[in-house]
Amino acid sequence: PSATIIISLFNFDKMLTTLVLIFLLTAAENANAVTNIQGCTALIEETEFENGFREMNLACQVDSGLTFSVSGQGLDEQWILENIENGYLVSGESVLSFPPDAFIENGSGRIEIPSNGLPWIHNQEEQERKRRNLAVVTGEKKVLVVRIVAIDAETSIDAAELSDSIFGTKNDSVNMKSQFKACSYNKLNIIPATGDDIQDGVITVSIDEKVSGTGQGVIRFAAETALKNKYGPSWYSLFDHFMYCLPPGTNGNWIAHGLFNSKVTTYNDKWCTYVSSQMHELGHNFNLGHSGENNAYDDETGLMGFSYSHDDSPKMCFNAAKSWQLGWYNNRSRELNKTGPKHYQGSLVGIASENPEIDGPPMLIKLNQLSSSIDYYINFNRAVGFNSETQEGANQVLIVKAGAEGVGSSTSTLLAKLSKGGSYTIPNFDATGKDMIVQVDKIQLNKNLADVTICLGTCDFNPTQSPTE
Image (tube, helix red, strand yellow):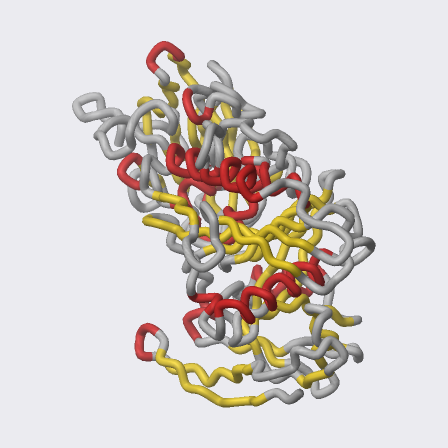
């Protein structure tokens, strides 16, 4: 088996052209083959474990659509995070090339860098200056669910139950499709994939691998290869998302795995049926980072914190920072900053309380620091309807901070959960020498409203004008 290396020029937006080295996998289906690597698209992958631990790694997608994990002595999470934070490593955009001794051992689903070398990151200038969220989180998303039969095990849930738990094709009233539809107010529509041997969005594939003691990446890679062999070179472009439901018995106590700004999520058997896990991992596909409080996962006000081993619960959506990034409530979002409107006095309404396309009080407020990419986001976490089972901060005003200007992937941090009379101070907001103060004046559950006062420095509302500016 051999590999072909081609050099291509791609026209990017704003008339910028980037020289991209593309590794084209032309053969190498033999599990013993070793192929040198020249370049592929970088992807950030995160794996969630039962104990709440999470692990971040680097992956690489070649032109055929197959995805490989990347490992090496010098490649660790600190390197990944540093390059994400400085804007050089953009999942789904950046292109990686490797030291001469790097290789793919085909069948392993892994790129190895034997030396202490590191991958080189190639970007166009705009990508180096500013991270962007390329994931479009509206419209129809065609999802293929992949059930797997291996040599020694198969996914314990049958195709009909998988379809029902993800798309609600039978009697499952709370599922990924229904909850995304509710949270987005019909802006995002998850639809079952169709095609040869696909039944209600689910296909069953057979692989020549043993599951017991094998890493989840190896099993997923074998399933990807089976899809490529079945549907041909264009297999990856046929669907918007791939959900791989792995048989039980793989190595480790992992529960789910997602690729940022990509199409691929992977689940440990029954976790493929749990609505919070489904939405959390697809959230990574939509380029959403994690939501934390004391650690990276423990903001339980929304779905980018912990996942829960329940089929139909909890019914909730996303915190204020993630909601701002998703853009579903733009008509009811407001921004305060040091040069524009500096104050707000009025009501906040919960996202599940009324349609955001109808004029009314804001659902989200962003406190935008113009001198920094780190900003603050506020919402009223009203526990009603499709957000009725939020696991933390119910019926309180919440404040979170996040980076990336609210448009790119960033871990958010829950800072405050405020009830009536509560307040939170952000000192020296945006290097102004003034504090930004958020105060909750009243909570009216019967109206699904929280009345707040937000001021940079001293509140100086003009009594002859509307107090909301």
